[in-house]
Image 1 (cartoon, rainbow, N blue to C red):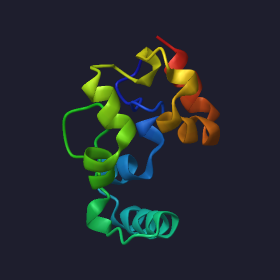
Image 2: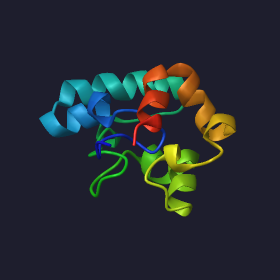
Image 3: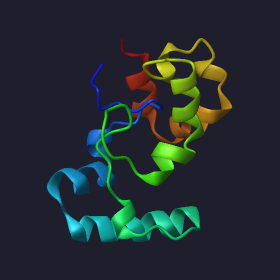
Image 4: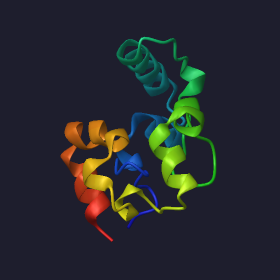
Length: 111
């Protein structure tokens, strides 16, 4: 499995925060901050849009680093991803990601 598959199965290489960080793309940071602010009903500033991947060492968005219940759960259980969990199919935490992104489940099922 690629290192840039997040605990939830999303592909970090396709994430705008990751892309903006790797390319030092300020306009993409601004666009992403605006969109994420609207989607999450909180203020997210462009300087918050920096991430080198969920499971890698390095900078992460504040949400992913500190607030993501999926990431916290997988790290607590010492899983590589949620794909290691026997409860994957019935997990409430990861269910929203899987429902909204079929590729995430496929990524989690790959070993």
